[in-house]
Length: 149
View 1 (cartoon, one colour):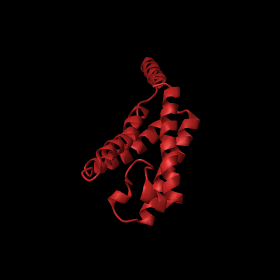
View 2: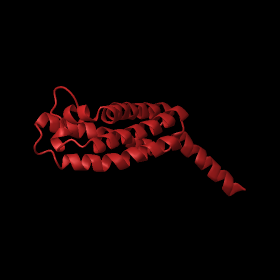
View 3: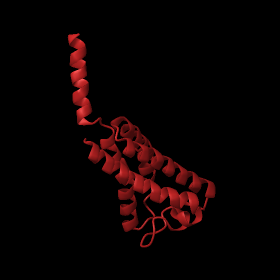
């Protein structure tokens, strides 16, 4: 994957993290009562009673992912993006798994939208896990040089 594609993915994930993180951390009641917004059932409120501590912690988690993602995007280094991709994957797999297993009471539009919204970061994080093509070529050249010494 080239640097531009990697940075585009990072900025998409960063935008997602900023949207969820700021809303949940700074406006936890509004996040609980109305996320994801107009036209959808409140996905968080659907899960149970308001818990300010839990909602703020989720917001802080998303902002932590944002901070790491911004650093990775600005550094343009594959290893930084790999670390951010791994963090998103570790978070996204169980997050998606839980919600997919608890779709039964949601309207169809919400069930589909929620599944897609939670699968997107997982799918986007996977390409970040692979080193840049140039890095692989450079590593092969370095390995060949080591064997000829």
